[in-house]
Image (cartoon, rainbow, N blue to C red; front, side, top):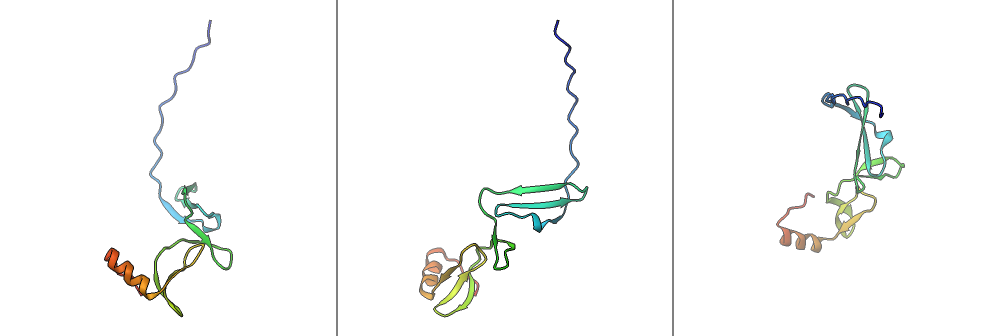
Length: 105
């Protein structure tokens, strides 16, 4: 005779999650970790990098925004990434014409 199998208990829904703050010291290139109001932690993982290391080795959010750079010959740049993209004036004119987008700067 087989032993009896207890019926599984019904799942209890988790309470709504409220993020208190990001724990920036737990960042990686592709994760953010948040402290929740009840003391638990929640990780948010991405398949692509969402952070880069700055000159002091700290993880910073990647921001692909192109803005005025002040660099000679390259009036525009995207600098908040693992690499820097610099753009000269004529390429920005071409981007504006092709996309209709305005670039801050």
